[in-house]
Image (tube, rainbow, N blue to C red; front, side):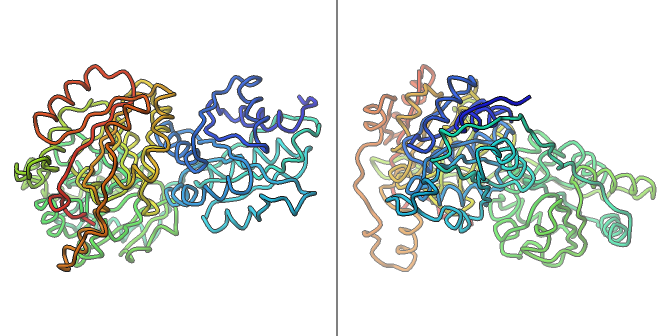
Length: 540
């Protein structure tokens, strides 16, 4: 079926035809009519942000938590240039997004806001699809959604403003997406991999973000081998409640788990690129057989070169390996019989002490892990505070964990927390941010969370400093004062923006804040006042 539409209507219809019900955005003259049509004619929901980059971050977290393609929209020129950091973050996170970006009219190259948008997008690593003509809207939108899913990255659909009020037929078009992963091809490499696993006396199963869908198959393989299970940060929570789950692998491991990994002689890695933080810059992989399994050949051998590698789906590969172990009647390793899981998953306790006017950060995190809602979605901004949060705060599953560190930027967390909350409206979202990150990005969007009435709990680790830089000065016995700031009260800011804010300088104040948390009615902020000399160094 086809019908005559204005181009702005066709873009809205095509976006809706791809299952989009929510669009994050900031309106301008090149996209406002499309947004209006999406809401009024297609029945979609528009979530307006305060900054263009926020729209992409919100859509990225929405995609991660919901499992759908995230969609955002901005207008042209400076609106798109404001998105460079967010686009890079989403690209490096392999997040499928479609960004409907306006462009200045093709017949007005001297427009004040004109910029080469294709070249701008290219530097971020995101993809680019040009809206070619009014007659090709359905094809071009379909291509953008297809590429976002197959390439697993953001795709910017470039929409010239002068097209919007032109008319053309609109034929519905949605492309089949061919991403079904394949199994393992028989051959020498498979035989070698199985041989290494069969002969290992201390094997360990490691799952990354590319293996989240394969939990059950990996657990069956681990149980058959009597091998402990571990995850990368991106797969945090995948093996919750398994008796031999040692949690995060690498620099974020407990001391006992780190020692156990060092003792292992074979690591079977599913869906992880084995970056430096996972391997502790290669230290944890020395003297071991490494088998790497991934659907993406470019992910294999990036951090270190494995002894065997299979380009295959994690679940299908695990089933194949298990089948041949059973066929050959390979005995279990017995490795897990030696393990005390409680010891392996216990991090070093806090000191219980803090200077007057401050709380102990580690002890406070332990209390928050117990007190915060268990069905939470956990989001973390970047900063020195984050690694202790990753280690000490639990999550129900990997989809409930969002870390905004793919580009090493700070100030992205609150925006992603909003996207996560839109994706999971019946669950509380907990965001941990530093003071610098909140000033850089969170303060812009806190009122957005208030306007949306989100169940958002924001914890600010306020050491009144850029902590990662502060500790470098201190370590070199230099004056850290250039990294220190006298910020306004974040608790008061939260209240003035329409939320609830509590400042915490003692354990008694923490208890009062946690009691008030039970009766929260919207965005709720707890400002932890920390001594910059008392916050642990990052574990990376």
